[in-house]
Image (cartoon, rainbow, N blue to C red; front, top):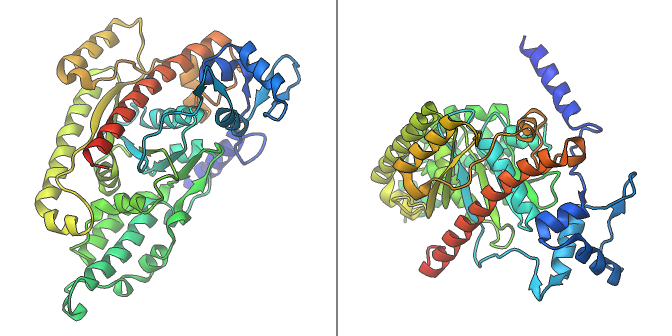
Length: 425
């Protein structure tokens, strides 16, 4: 039964990325670029292109009515063009990339859809994005065009690498290494040493988006929860919850602008690593009571888990470069699958706001046909060609995500700049 299921799964994935196994990002029309990316009249952009033939000119497709541009060409236009004396490049504070975890207990609330669309929107806005897929279901990984992934190239591998490095660091912190009660890296299991020998950049994979990279996941990464418990038993001084934070601290500050985590629907070793590495926590929730109940439970249990870690790992974490207790720069709740004409959904939105106040995002993700198709075909609204549906249907779906992204961007930049001013980053 499992073999038949796997064969069908592989067939669906190949068909999803038709015409080839490798998923490719579609081009974007001059109408899309001018209206949704540059916010200028199409004729103004056409005039700029006509005045400077060294600029990317795009390609005319079969209909012959519009020019279409790759994202690489769009980003070159961003760098070279100015309108009314203003740059088209997005605002980017100094320092390292900001890290955002998209997480909740409840399955089906749209965590991956939110992570995927925020990453895509940020890339279309000119930002360089790194996604980290913490979820063994690997939906975000597959949506980015990666199908075959080994568990050693996932967060599991990062944890093995961190265990090896931390084991040696702790050993070397003793005046007499032989007095260290914990094992050194060369005393760990051979499979841990082998996976842990990878370099920082080995875990990062390119995607079909030229400015989005990903640290992928796979089904076998589910076993990291069992393996991590074994690793903790091997090395009781290992601050297991700080692996990803320490890994990301190794990346050059200017390699990425935004790092987005897609988390599993549970509080375990992977989701705790995401929480301790994140600057901002984004919590998607559907507009129903059970989603509210799950969100409340998630906040409580995550808080309890982080408090327990702070109580038990204070000095060990500080020595390992992790500040406890953990404090997020911001926490936001984002309503998903929202129907504007549904009075029950509106009532639940009011209930969320009565409890969580300004922490509830003003702009929910609206349920539209295009949003439904994004999950069915593993393509975001931004990846869907508006010529395959009515332009208004596509535009409505895109505008819902655009509004949510603009609110996300404002939250991100405010937290980012405050962190720099206060010396947190």
